[in-house]
Image (cartoon, rainbow, N blue to C red; front, side, top):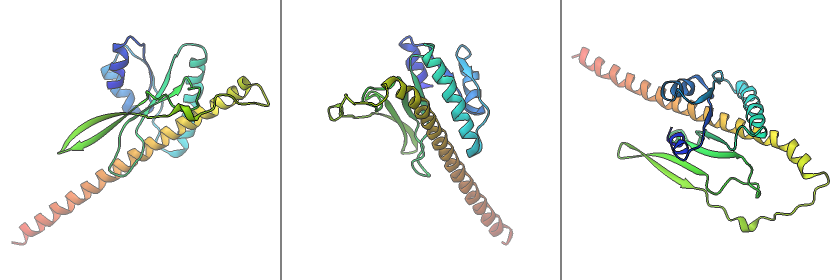
Length: 195
């Protein structure tokens, strides 16, 4: 939502493609004026492949037709069982160096004394190490048109599976805490009833 408000403040028209029912409900309640493309809930690993294919086709067609100027994916990569921090990654337009835009932001949400803190960080890339001229056997446009859908599909599949792993980790921690709390309550009630 923070990224959305930042982009609308600078006058960009934003189109959101939500994956999952929770994200769809979130944006349906808060932003009625935004074009939303809902997609079914992704609950199994097999679902992520068909979802990534559908998102790739949709975003690539809209980008190539000129309807979209930029394609970003916001997802939660899995770092550890206790760490889930949202990440913004620009997929299109491609940078000539073949890497992400140095201005891409990564937002890390951490806890400090029980409070959530947002810490934006910017990728640091040294572009002087990259060569810009290559010799191709086939025309570069032909190679790019063959590789671009594969690149996008891999990037979307990566984001979906990372988010799924992150969600499962959060569920596991929540379930473990609930089980621990139930065990504590059982111990307290057992002591109280045996007095």
